[in-house]
Length: 372
Length: 150
Image 1 (cartoon, rainbow over the protein chains, first blue to last red):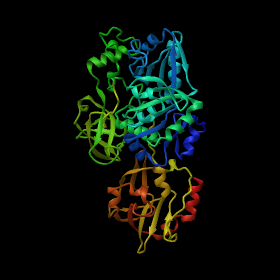
Image 2: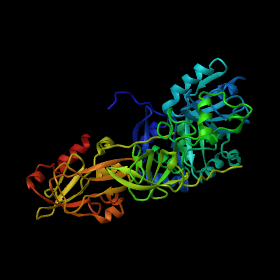
Image 3: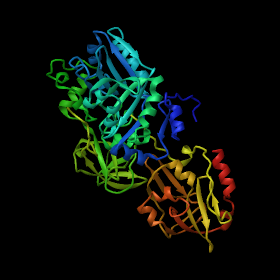
Image 4: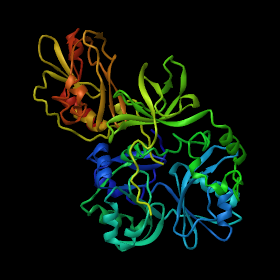
């Protein structure tokens, strides 16, 4: 056991009151599941609405005239052209083309609101301060909680509290007043469902969470369900499916790099590792992130080797679970390009036996985002 | 952007929540520190499963790997695997013996290990080689104490 004292989110007491199983995650004491269990929480999110505490994640804002070009010098996304209220997915890249963290950026009236991974937030802040700290104001927001309300009925719940949210669409953000609390709410998430992420003052978080849980549609869900939901949705988990040794090309995330930042675009390159990424993009990566569906019932977990019919190594699993919606094992893996196209048959080694899996397009479960 | 929690042993997930052991015949049911129970039904044939506490610690069981009937295994050998959504745990032989039968209903519906761990969620039956190994296991009050102090 580590002697490190775990940090608590503003909802910690509520988690205990709800009977959550708590685990250490990224330095925080977090709920992995509630008494209903991961499968029930997962299904409730797909069918109704689930409330997640993601306050451990890093929230920060960048302000000043130099903020947009400063962010573009670190992230291959169109930030200068981002309209107020619009949100983008992106990543910090390293000089060698790896991914330092993935993140969400929303342009607000007076600043850019950024959400980063919990485990990376201190490094991200240092990265920003070091490289763009003189070009704009970089301000962490440790006094804010982050709640995710995810699922097809999330919109009903939030629109009752503030009708402005009924008009929002996927990947936009807006100010809203929810149960008396001033919030910044984006229509986005990490489950593949329609849903919202709510940034709220820490002191207002518990009252808001209780108000949301009072709705008949809403039940709490922990990090366990969040992981199975995001995996079914084909969304990467930083530190597992993407890292500083995987490039956006290998990870299949080049869709997040807009035309204006690609070779030949008006603001091509200009971010760390652009030369490496562009060259690999043009040439094609030797290994690629793929989805795998198990042809047998045995779950295939992170670290499992993937081999071909002759037993030669093709790659390794980076995330895997039994998909609650499909009731079959699913996984993400990095495979040799020769085997990285859909419907290829490969084998996962689990406890010394080879189990057949098939390369599959992702998401494993269709996204149900509400677009304009 | 979320967690990934695979553990290799049930131990890590124990939270020290007390459970009352519902099994009536404490004389014929014993427990292991690995949170398995073994019930001797007579003729040295015993039934093995996981405890209420183990199923709660694991969460939703989605897959079990059961031993091959006819195989003889020693006490402490890995007899099978229990996998929940987030965790994989080994199932150990509480005593040495020959595997007589496995629970095919559990293989088809692993959630039986959650809903009825002491009953329909049993894992396998074993012909006990040496009953003194059974006698050395802990009884219900001692197991309950172990769980409380975990």
